[in-house]
Amino acid sequence: MTDFKRLLETLSGVEFILVGGVAATAHGSVRLTVDLDIVYRRTKENVRKVALALAGVNPYLRGAPPGLPFRWDEETIWRGLNFTLTTELGAIDLLGEITGGGGFDDLLPHCVRLEPFGIPCLCLSLKKLIQVKRAAGRPKDFDAVAELEAILEQTAEAP
Amino acid sequence: MDRITRSRGPASYIFTSTKTAYDENMADKQELRLDPDPVIEAYKQHIDLTLIRESLKLTVTERMERLLEMQRLAEEMKRAGRVAKPAR
Image (cartoon, rainbow over all chains, first blue to last red; front, side, top):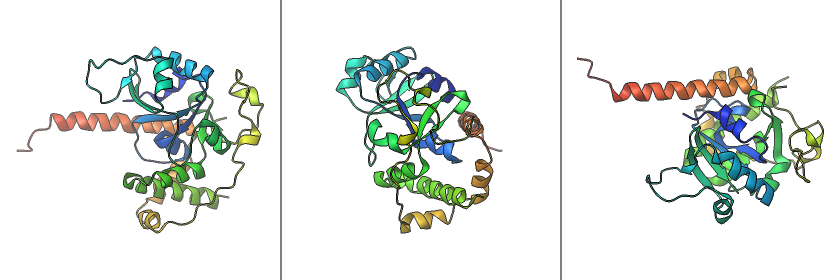
């Protein structure tokens, strides 16, 4: 199980944008998701913050065999881009870029601000979330995109 | 404040340590156009709008708490499935 609240608290001070299933939940989706997907900003200062923030929850490559050498630090983040991790608080996808959306600075103009559990964070707007999920073109997302578009229609119809 | 809002407060509200802080001018500057996709339209026929309407009545935190509850239920059902025995 992923403790979304504690993961968000752990990421306090990090520049990131909520994307994926949790962002969909924030917009009203009723689908189950089990990981936290975030796009982090690839700046020196922020990469350092990401490394420090997650160091305390023992990140490890999700699905990798136990015992595989893996060092979590700034250098590892700079050498990679997108990381699918398991932590003591659950699964987190740490993304430098997403298909159809780009990186943090590309997505920033399409964010809304929200405070789940009283924790301020940025979340991809509903329209942009639909757009990037469409761009990914994965059949497994078709149902999710249909639900998000239905939410968009419902919110547009609301008084 | 718990519902989703566009940024209206001071730029320093979320990020105080960066030069390029998020501010209200950054929220959805570009109007996104979403043309209907026939595949998605077909999938949309099977969406339960009653569930969505109920969800939209909740705050963001309530939606996240419901997600945690769903996760707990899924874990419990998986556990129950592992130890399930034939009915007779």
